[in-house]
Image (cartoon, rainbow, N blue to C red; front, side, top):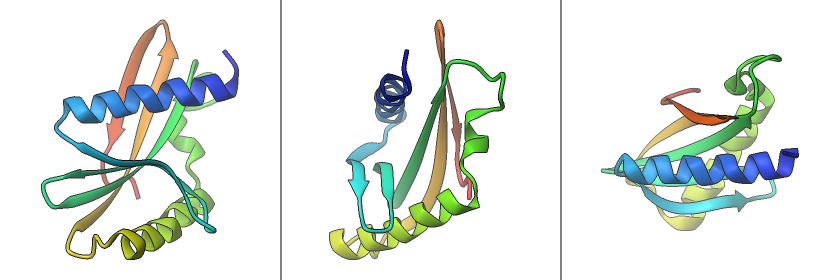
Length: 115
């Protein structure tokens, strides 16, 4: 499975997981001049910006380890643009990472308040 297919499958799995947990998906692959946000979701009055990382192995580390400070800043800056553009100023904000391990048995690890 190539990286693009892994990414797409990982995002689909993450969306399905979030919906099963009571989240409402607002946007996917939201692009700004600052970067891209994989998933934007809400639950109660919390607006959640989700970075999805999918891997087939942990041989080179866990997926969340790929979300470095630079990537976090891109997501943060993009989230500010999103909030302003979409009018979510009354919501609490949270930044999560969802790890998806695609090695036969799909496993999901939802890291809330990841950064």
